[in-house]
Length: 85
Image (cartoon, rainbow, N blue to C red; front, side, top):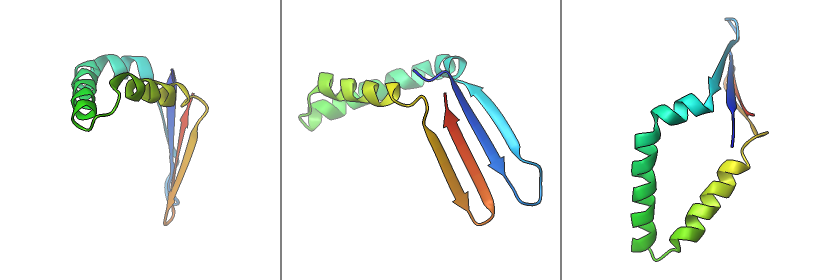
């Protein structure tokens, strides 16, 4: 499970902005929304005849694989780096 997300925004005419976001407090605040999303996913699995346990297991494996991932996004002269630890 990821513990920290670092977001760095490089803009050419300003200082870079770096934000550290701890995952656990954000997850606790968003827990009611997560419960609703999981329930909606279960309903969607039943409607489209997908194995609920297999779908939730696959989602958990994707979340567990996130630590160590880096996403670099560049648009024009602005660059965004997202690192998940």
